[in-house]
Length: 170
Image 1 (tube, rainbow, N blue to C red):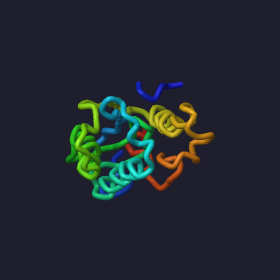
Image 2: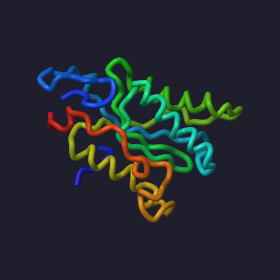
Image 3: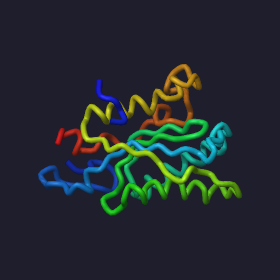
């Protein structure tokens, strides 16, 4: 089994013909993890977790990135994203973290300054990452099944499919 952390777009605002050779910046899919400042359990509060989920969905609908999977844990999130061709990974994470912080209007620091990322280069790693993300609440004892956890792609469905550059196995 390949660990999680170790074409073009076929959905949303990015459409490329299958015969077009994609530039490296157009084949970027990442597992991203960000942690709250001082590992505070901000997302134990339903309204706060819902606000972060809505932040993900809003920037996705604006075409900033494709959102393949996500989970919001009490003190961190994991997301599997493919930034838009004109958006760097750093900018995509800034949309998420900064957009959430702005909406929350907290006087305290919300996030640790950095984030962790791992580029996903194969279909197998993509599938393993989705499983890792969606099963995270089960492993932590927050839900009996992935679908029962409200703040995860497992309970929502309808997110972006695997990018064509991974489906094709390039």
